[in-house]
Image (cartoon, rainbow, N blue to C red; front, side, top):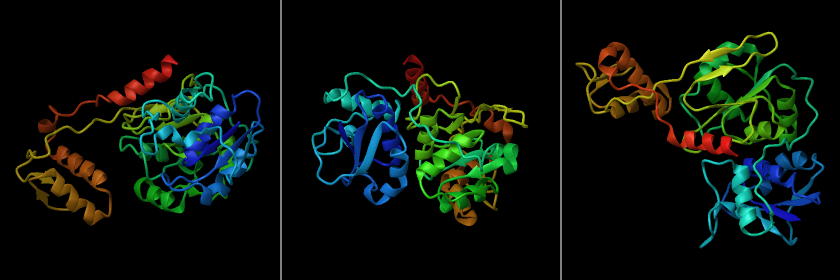
Length: 338
């Protein structure tokens, strides 16, 4: 079968989980651009080595070959086209839903089985790989606790910009620049555990079925796969970090959601700004603090909230509770039913 993809790197890795199970392979996977993503052709050198390391698929850049399954259409790109992507099922299953609908797949695929096979890197054996891209974050995820717990065992992959941002927020970790996703896959496979948010490298960890902890974005929990036994999905900030050789695991409690009315005044001066001063409105106080400290508005909002809460905890006690994260709960339920 000739299959095309114009998706991002994570889309393609998820798609490979289906290709691995389609009978009568190896199948051909052609990369092309359709104007709806960042463009995969110019980045094909990053993923083609990984694709062509697997015996069930042959990858290349599309020229003019006949395509049997234009998988990029699963997102409903194009006028009048139906959208098969759902944020509360995995990217792999959304692809499969589209393939079934147009008649190229005979059944639904869900990604229960390992679909990536690489030789683990011995160079980085025993490390804990961390990744945090700029998209699909969750402020509740306990990165500071993870950095404190694992210390110099941490090894960060990704871009230099992501590394600088991570170190600025959570503390210094070692960084390794890699040439392509095949190299990343080997490093992940050789590590003790992988920790990251919803990125292409998280899809690789899933494809390897490697022990993994995933920072779940509550609005788009599309990395939950059925049959998972060695993955921790973290959305509310709570987790039990498993033991790794030479280091005992720990349990981290969930983080409280902040529900106090932003227009209310928790103190006589209003909302207290950690960097100095106060304001009657939380949003303005957060904006001021963000500008002074060079942090995001979301992070500043949390810091102003917590700083004010420390000054008057009794006032806040009626508002704070563990958040009811409905979309995440639905995604978990769907993954467990399958």
